[in-house]
Length: 431
Image 1: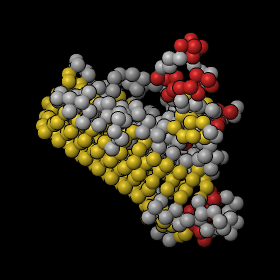
Image 2: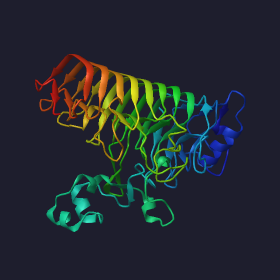
Image 3: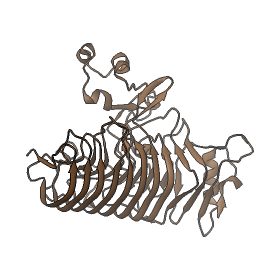
Image 4: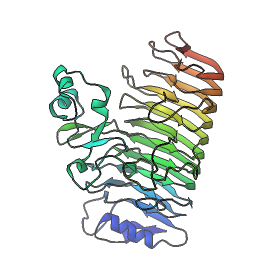
């Protein structure tokens, strides 16, 4: 067992790297509050780059805070098998990150990049309508003159100081993810609070036999920076990507700017990206002849929170050119304040779009139970759900049905029971 305070370096990142190199056979790294002779009054660790975790490494955080510096365009933690220049991340096993007490991971004061690979960086990147009309040079003059903005006027751009630098990528990418694991099995992440993440707070690609538990999020798709509210896109909570299976997600609380939990099996037929590519939100390659494209055998339990960014969901299942099956969603409580209506609570599939096509058998053997909804949508079915069960649902919104099916054949062999809807409408089939 190694304690980082027993090591020194020219920066906090170097201290962590020196400690990791000294790990012995048990490979346990302990991170308490910072106690270093150079700045005895500072107890927060400032990271300039990701902490890279080799196989068999356990990190124990003890009542500490780790913060990304304004110079950092990287993750808090990343499995060491992936990153820039690693085209094909090889399997890695046994990465464990555990918080003890109050353990916080916090984004930078002035992030270099926020958002996924489709978001254009801007600095400033105003959030409010009045600031957008005044400062956003990407909005066409006619819309500025009319004062009528469309959805993408606000959401196609995201804050990042790298927008001001000629030799840096001006798009978001996987470096904005808080904790990033790739091709990793037998892992766990537990007991952390993640504040103002630069993108998805936790993302797992092709990971298996793991658990993510007791995580609190605090993000709202915006942050006040230098006296102005800035737009910060894609602040999901937990994302499971293609190839993930046999994973438990349990006891998730707080608020996110985007989806709280997202299972996104997107396997489009776009251009090939080797592992570590920039302008891409996955760190692994996308050659689906060499990778599993599906997600299966996932348990999601005890989710209490809401999407503070207004437009997204508590739990999203998105298969595109791929399949999701054997998923248990049990115990989702929408804690939205009165009068606050986020996008919805459960979102199943999506209209065919840039993500790709929803296959007719794309979602099977899904159970959804014990859900309390108070958002713009309760359960929204835009894809195909088959051979599944929806039970014990309370929809508190009097203006929407409990289950909204928007595609012909959207429900097939789906058993529904014990559903209450304040609107009086249980299932609306617009197809």
